[in-house]
Amino acid sequence: MKVRVFETTEELGRVAARHAAQILKKVICEKGSARLLLSTGASQFKFFEAFVKEDVDWSRVEMFHLDEYIGISPQHPASFQKYLRERFVDIVHPGKYHLMNGEDDPQETIARISAILGERRIDLGIVGIGENGHIAFNDPPADFDDQRFYKVVNLNDTCIAQQLREGWFESEEAAYKQAISMTCSKIMDCETIISFVPYQVKAQAVHDTLTLERTENVPATLLKEHRDITLYCDRDSASLVSKEVLDRFA
Image 1 (cartoon, rainbow, N blue to C red):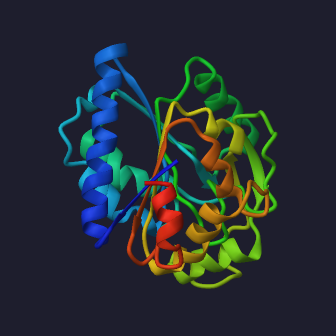
Image 2 (cartoon, one colour):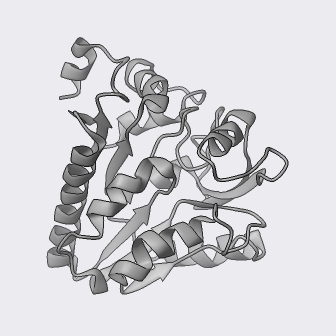
C-alpha cells in the first residue's frame, strides 16, 4: 500500500481523480475498454467532482458499484443508485453501467451482476473506508474468505450512526438496516484500488488500518495486502498517524 497525504480535500480529490483517469486511459489503450467499481457516500464528493471532469473516453468504461440498501427506492436521497446517476452516470454517460435497484429482489440482483462480473476482472476499484473500518458494507467482524461477488449483510449500529450523522436519514427508525454488499475477497480482486478517505471522522479508521495487523475487526486492514493500492488522505484523516508510519507507506 502507498499512502499519499494532502493539505486539503479539494487537492486530494483532484490528484486522486487524475490518478484514476490515468489508470483508466492506460487500460483502455491496452484492452479497448475498462471496468470501474465505484464507492459512494459523503466522503467521496470531492473525488467525483474532479473525476467527471477528467479527459477519459467514458464510452469505453463499464461501471459497477459496491453496495446498495435493500428496500430503498431509487428516488430516495440515500439511494446509491441515485447518488451515482447524479454524480457520475448522467454526467459522463459511461458505455455500460450496472446499477443495483434496492427495491428489486436482492438475490436476483446479486445473481444478475455476479454473472456479468464473472466475465472479466475489474480494472480499477474506488473503495472508501467507513468510520468503523468497513469496506463496502462489510462491517466488523468481516468475512475475508467469502468468495461470492455480493451478499446480503446486516448493518451494525456504528455504520447506521455514520449514515445518520451524514444526513442520509432523518432517524434511526428511517434508516435501512440491510444492504447488498460486494464481498471483501472480490474487492481485493480488483487489478488496482484507489482508496479515497478524507475528513477527521475517518482519522481513527485510517490509523487502525495502517497500524494494526490484518484483522476482521478492522476490515480495511485487508487492503494492505493488495498488490496495487494507493490510499489518499487529507491532513485531517491522517492526523492520528505518526510520521514514522506514514513514511513506511510513502
